[in-house]
Image 1: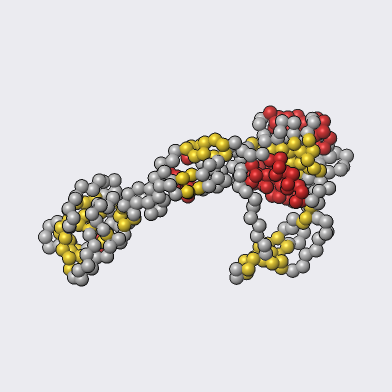
Image 2: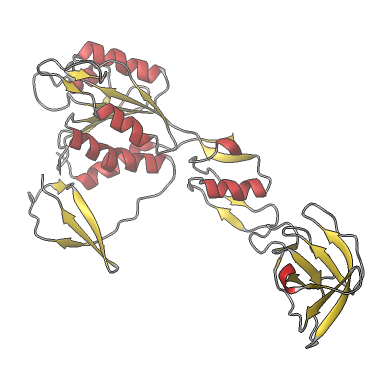
Length: 362
């Protein structure tokens, strides 16, 4: 029986890497970048007004300043006035003429007594209410790195830059199998004596959908070696790179998964790990190269198997790097078997900036 640290080394080494592909920007949320993204344009693309108002030159005169209005510019218009004096009426987002040095908000401007004129109280400060070209993103700026998971905010930036397709990692297919004739899927079917609801498979499928993967819930609940291997073969034929099963991995008479894997020529990487819960966990390499995770059927063991064995492999495959570790002060006492890595249910507490953890009962 190996330690948890040894187990992590083994499964990370067996994980492989996802291949690179591209996808349309509209479908990129949650996908993982395969190559860095460098800015190919400026954001903003041009100097533009941050306010509705009047663009003009700066002026140090401390008093009333009267200016003629040369042009009115809305968002999408092209400036045509080239005069170096006067003012330009301008709307939010509209391009600022090159000769203008500042924007005065409309509420700080008075319409002059003569048509086409305004008055402003000086001095008029330079560089007010103008969003300069490239001040958010400049051409050549590194924006997103390999392994970054694309968010809605990233998509906004990429759309603004005119990016149509995004270099991403292919989404590995994961098949989830629940073993056990006692399992019932249909919530409307009354349970017979000894039957239980299938909760592991819905949990695993839902949790995996938070990752850049494709998840398939395999039908049926095989309860013996032949039926299990038929389901396993179907998952392999469908292109699953990771296959997760729950149940039938311990040492009982009906724990058929180890024998089933041996029968198809799978390579056992390890069986049992010095952890609690989830000690009977089994990891194997299938004949087609897919990685198999045999998780115990106990729901908490299935949770631990996903979180502390499958997730590190996904991070390896998707080039996300090792997960950062946080440390916290323990609230109360906690004792454990000295040879086992314990995964305990706990509550996290932020106590005025000091992170604390309270281990829960059960």
